[in-house]
Image (cartoon, rainbow, N blue to C red; front, side, top):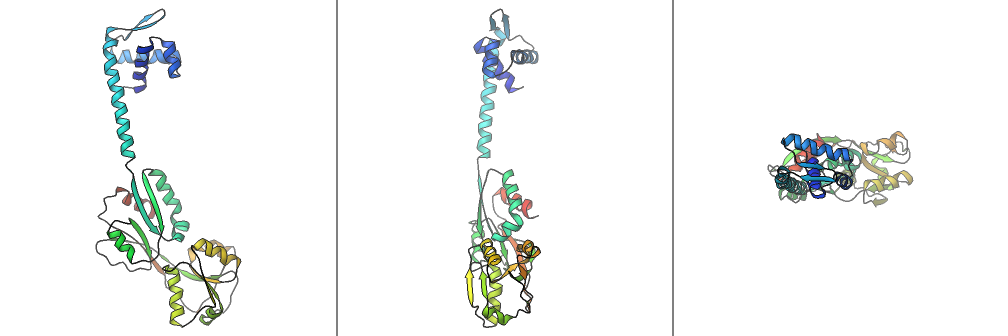
Length: 286
């Protein structure tokens, strides 16, 4: 039975006037009359006596008032409970490298969040960090993308996502660049713990090389902005600079050393009680 029709009946039983009921509900008089007639047809009784200056409840109409009110009250309680269910928010904590969020997953994550408004989302910039596995084991973090990290933990779920090619780049063409040239270069790096930075540091350590200058940036975007406008070199995943290489804002440096491909793995605790985790993973990463 239509709730709007029952609400029309209850208000008409109070106003005892079709015109006033229509005005209060912002309906036409014909709509109010139609609601009453439809309800009477469904119940197979006359609910009102039609009079010259208004309407009066019949004895059947008077009896139905209390039942109609119960229906309305029950519907209100249902809506309150439904809102309560929707408002039982989950908090999802996801660790991911800034570059992965910006260039790969931002659109899908935002689409998922729009479809799951009850989820409170915390994004944390993550590097290859041994301690993150402990956080996930203890349910302090829900999901983490770890690049170039060997995940050995039987209690955690590990999903292999992709491999990333690393390249050395600068804002101008540098021909015949050699390892020894790092001594006379300005090296641009992100924060310690970043897997991209670790690879270039391995070369420096292995060859006992200290760059002329090292500039550390808080994020990949600030590093790229500097690199496009000033001298320096940086080791970055190729997917981050695809557009800049195509537009010749940056140039790939031919280098005698072959950098390994970095593997990205997603880890989470399969014993979690949060229903949103599986939904998030399936939507964003599969």
